[in-house]
Length: 233
Image (tube, rainbow, N blue to C red; front, side):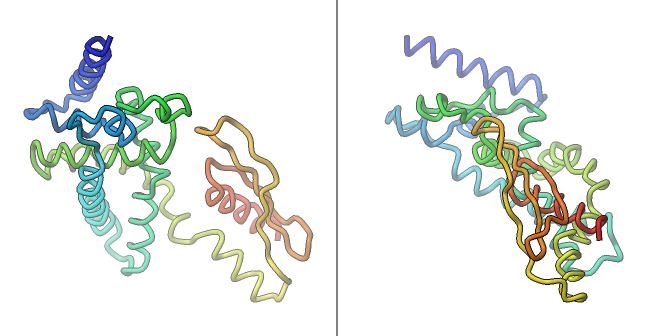
């Protein structure tokens, strides 16, 4: 039974390698990138988890995104470039990139992690995406990682203006400028399974709701609520 399980996992990694045209020379690097700590802890046979590769991939994608922002926005000051980079490499976005390539389906997870939806959990997916980048870098070179990452990043151009002019900051400035009163963000409702939560947030001034928004995280829902409030005031 163990042999069959391992065989399926190897085939899963092989399928991912072929589907994404990764062409790994050192296939063990890809397997390790797909191995969550929960799986390594359960097996205790020398299996290594993906956390060191995640560390490396985090540094690689930071540089790629920094260079991308620097080239695409030649007039922006350092502060705005930093906001763009922080936005693009946050775990929420990396998890979406992982979902686009169905990375979760290839992950090796422990039994407990599987049963609680680890294949779909943002924290697991975002970390695995970074680990995959680290593995590609070690197996090949920086240019290959860059060519792999940029197709995920380029579509983000449409959202960059919102990042630079953060609606929460804008709304806060308006509220303070006109002395409108205390500002409070409140989670009005949550829905969906644990691995795909949707948060609904209301923003209030003096107890009066000024805006509503929803998103896959509290922070994203708060930004949408602030954006809605800016329209309303």
